[in-house]
Amino acid sequence: MIPRYSRPEMVALWTPEHRYQTWLEVELAAGRAMAEAGLVPREAIEEAAAKAGTFTPADAARIDEIEKTTRHDVIAFLTFLEERIGPAARHLHFGMTSSDVLDTSLAILLRDAADLLLAGVDKAREATSKRALEHKRTVCIGRSHGIHAEPTTFGWKLAVWVDELGRAKARIQRARETIAVGKLSGAVGTFAHLSPAIEEKAMSALGLRAAPASTQIVQRDRHAEYFGALALTGASIEKFAVEIRHLQRTEVREVEEAFGKGQKGSSAMPHKRNPILSENLSGLARVLRGYALSALEDVPLWHERDISHSSVERVIGPDATVTLDFMLHRFAGLMDGLRVHPERMRQNLELTRGLVFSQPVLLKLIEKGMERQAAYAVVQRNAMKVWEEDRDFRELLAADSEVKKLLKPKELADCFDLDRQLRHVDTVFARVLGKPLV
Image 1 (cartoon, rainbow, N blue to C red):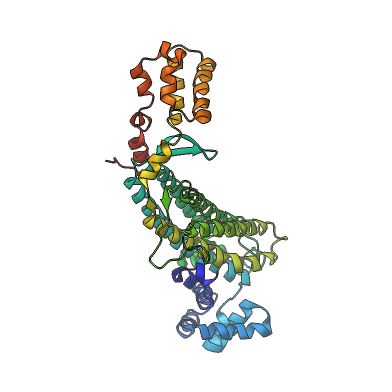
Image 2 (cartoon, rainbow, N blue to C red; image 1 turned 90 degrees about the vertical axis):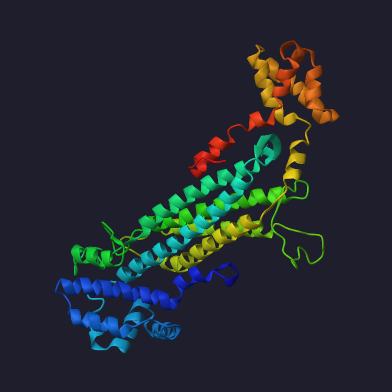
């Protein structure tokens, strides 16, 4: 991923030197498990560990140079270790195949990336929770099909987002568990040269689980689930961003992204203040969905393996994790700085002159004995006059002979009680945040 959409904490996981360091961790864990089983000398493995040291960008460049000749990345890596360590290096990779290293190290990297993503979800959820509590009773209009529907609160909208971010966290946690699986089962997964016991011991040392059964590779449905969880989290963030974009439209103007001193909205129009952060999040979510599709395409490999998945994962592993990490932190910052306009929300709520209370009137007429379809016709007839004649809904109803027969003025007034419409806000907030709210 380009630096513009990257945070250094996540990028550091995917540098060439860190990737090779992770390969070394796998080789040493396997070597120590083999030494305990008496297959290789323990002192040779420890000598290799001491001499290998920590990989640098120069070391990574040397491995890449070797690969120009070998045209095989793991062989280039092992050749480099032989150069650096000497004869003891011959005991590394004993009985192993390249995928034992590659798939196990990828599991480590994706697991560690998931930990950073989970921290990002927590940050985004905390920022959204704070604003939800702040605006728990900030009344605004709810919309369906883009049209005014019934009253809600801005905090209620955000509580829905908090709840959804909780599900995103749970999905990433499950994906982390699913992906944290490695293998040392050899060329076609039959343990022809090592044993399941050695595999289990090595995986335990690496903080992974051994794949219960594998071919030459760990099966890619695991990876598809992982990238699917990332894409779905991105889709949720895009949903939130789209709502902010709609609410920032000039005609609506209920919220605005923060607009900093010296910031410019347009090279041509000095008045512009555009929802650029939200639009950026929408765009990046599309990229994540593409990565998820690529991961799904990797599931049906040939026989015990082919390498059609390899080039895909070299791209989507770093890029998808870096992208979602950036999105989560950008969204958290967006929510922290979001400008909310309660007065404008109230103006928009009152824009249709009471139409948003049509359902309470309908239900009250039914409650008083009118047939539903007849009650609907009465309410709709008056509602259409509001649309077409720009008149007040409550006044029209109060003058309607059929309404007057059934509803007393106080009963009609109660239908327009905003507090009654929103009386369950505390209950919903307690459900979402898991504690009593004031």
